[in-house]
Amino acid sequence: MICVKNLIGTSDNRVPNDYSSWLDYWEKEKNQKANQCSASDCSQSDNLVGAHVKKVGSDDNSWYIVPLCQSCNMSEREFLVNENLLVPVR
Image (cartoon, rainbow, N blue to C red; front, side):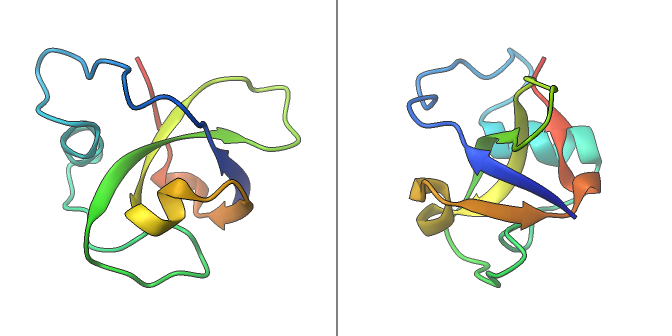
């Protein structure tokens, strides 16, 4: 598990041309369907979005996409996700 936090104000960032949304980007890059929120303390499976997150306490300033429910996506708290779920933003 790795600690991440949402990047606030990134909803205007354009998804790459071959994708319909950031969630579609995540699903195609991971070759799997998003079926629940990636936050370790949440089990929501409705209203998932492809959320922009950044690792906490790391020199890695890259942005990543993970599936989150809308509630977790709006949160400014730090939370744990499985590091294998992170997809770098290109």
